[in-house]
Length: 151
Image (tube, rainbow, N blue to C red; front, top):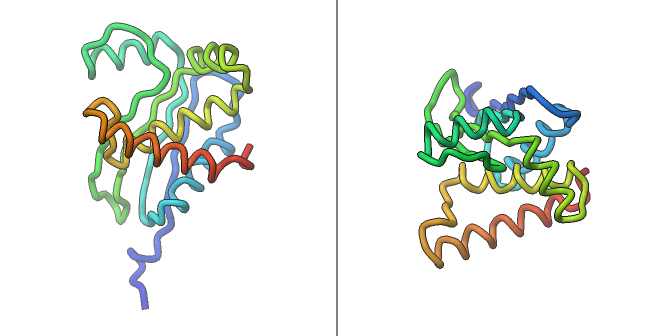
């Protein structure tokens, strides 16, 4: 029999400062990603914001003084029975522009960015060379395909 700690489901926290994206939908997408990966007892945070806030985060944590679409912060700490995997920060401003440029909906772009950030939280980094980028892209593609009917 599993202990109470082992029985804990995942917890997805989400907040937004901008946009009309439904928070429940965002939590559901991330919950599905955790399920697909077979992860349990995980807490993960999502923060939907604007270009100015993500630019400041990008400057402070990566030394890049420009807005970006998504940032991932890996925590991997154990707190209160949950493993805090990390936080995904998405700029709704940039997501809107990219959705328009790519010819798809804002929801589709948010879903793509959630997957991208999630793969980073799993420890993959496409900026560490060709082999790592290949593994990153393969997992990202598989996860996006798994979510293809989830809008």
